[in-house]
Amino acid sequence: MIQLKGVRKSFGKNEVLKGVDLSVKTGEVVVVLGPSGSGKTTLLRCINFLEAADDGELTIGDTKISFKHATSKEILNVRRQTAMVFQNYNLFSNMTALENVMEGLVTARNVPVAQAKEIAQKALDKVGLTDKYDSFPLQLSGGQQQRVGIARAVALNPEVILFDEPTSALDPELVGEVLAVMRKVAQDGITMVVVTHEMSFANDIANHIVFMDEGVIVEEGSPKEIFSNPKEERTKQFLERIL
Ligand code: ADP
Image 1 (spheres, rainbow, N blue to C red):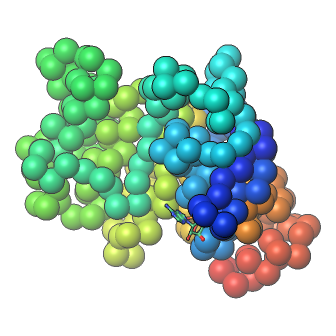
Image 2: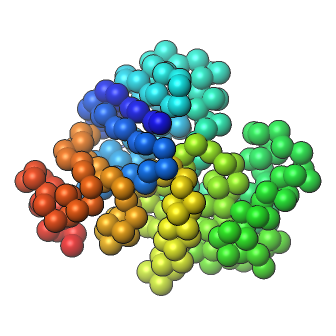
């Protein structure tokens, strides 16, 4: 469903992605692991053109796009098929939870307001925030804000949701509620690519795990293969440090 081929990205002289290939099948949850600075977030941001990759190809559905030569129409099209959940939620502080979820539907997808409201309510119900429609972000806990972030992504009904370290800004006691919501989303069969440091969550939820280091994919496989029987030395060292 999504295929990346030979993705390269540099920031100045710092080559952050050194030719990354990645395949994500429909309905699959792919978890990207790796040390800090290995390029995980940059890879995720390249998928929906939040970051402009220097080279490589993206295939999404039936469409193949060259990162170098992508037209604005192609970029818009990719953005319509993807949604992102950010580390720091990225909610509009002057809008209620409901308005935050409606915003993208109304402005980017041209959904009529009444219909957007209905979709947004359903999405907030799904993440357990039925009683928080009218709350502003600052009236919500971090976990609740991130659940609004997930509702906003789900409401767009994208082909894939990209999660960029969705729990890393949260106090430890709030991590569980966000992971629970993500499990629920995964159970609905939504395709997900998740950058996370939550190993037991990755082990439970992932169909496929990708281990990155220094801008390349070092190893990939099922959770069992990666966690119980890693083949590459760098994977072993990373897991030993973190587990
Ligand atoms: P990870 O998500 O694995 O921690 P990142 O993709 O965030 O890694 O970062 C990889 C490297 O790219 C780091 O060295 C980081 O400093 C650099 N980097 C990321 N974004 C930018 C940017 N906008 N400008 C310059 N350097 C960046």
